[in-house]
Length: 148
Image (tube, rainbow, N blue to C red; front, side, top):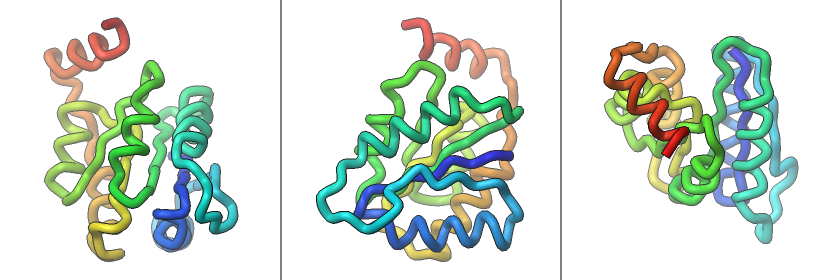
């Protein structure tokens, strides 16, 4: 599984820890789409767009993206502007599980200011390891997201 990860200044420090967790502890292929250095004046949309562009053009069978900013909502709004993206802001393991089971979320948005590092790891673990159920109504609803 290939994972594209991005953050603005609000999620920059946490992103570095998440990259280490994903590559060293989970052995995953992670691509950092930026910001590459802490810049208090950067803007989150460019990183959301970069991550989703790479995700949508990736040939991996199940590519995902993780986006971090202070509240998570801005990244989700930016990411969800692209057809084929199902970005979810997850605050706990339950929301991460439901985002995968019901909505086949392919982008996880994390509110960096609201969670501990341990909580973030647990959310990521749950989100990565929970499969989409392929239930007919959920497949239909996801298709509607791309056609409405």
